[in-house]
Length: 262
Image (cartoon, rainbow, N blue to C red; front, side):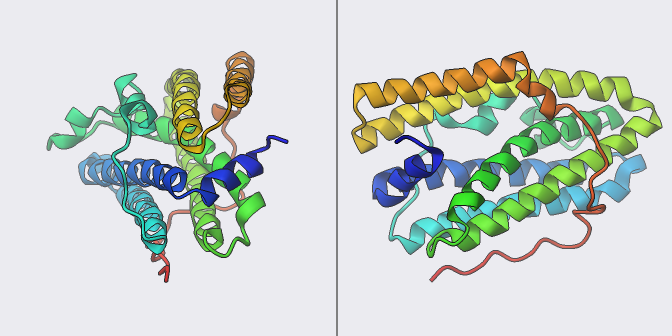
């Protein structure tokens, strides 16, 4: 029977599939680390108090990239080049979501609206990350090889999502409510398209590596399209709602260190 657990177990049991999975994950997390570090450096003077939280966000993402690379080393594997059609982070930028890398590579301070755009983008993508890691945590939290990494990354993603809610609500109370809702909706609708396309590309490559039959590949592709249809109709709305999180100040303080994997 096809299930999320059985599919990931297949990937986990095959060196080449696992290598591709960890390489894609490490690349995306490292890219997110760089983006947040640049945003923290370019925060406008009026929002300097936010800079340490953004920097913490970036440090967490960079840590996640190191964790996925460490998981590869533990298996005696080297990262592979990430195929362009599986690069979630870069595809989002190509669709105009978030802050352009050209802007982040410069030295011009960001505007308050830029920070709102960044937070809206993060709120949507962290929703996806939190849900994905929660799925892995439910099935693999006690796994001897990846359990500790899954638990740590999942907790971090939950913190990132809480931080986005809290900061966006602060900006909403300051008069940016309409701009925030507009940015959230635009980002959510773009993200679900990119997520569909990346999911199809990843599953196609995994199918080649793992030798999936055409019927199995077709069923998985149909499932991805069904998820997109649901998200396009109504599911995207979960990505644009805002509520004050139970845990306030989730990104206060320094990032925790990445664990060692023997």
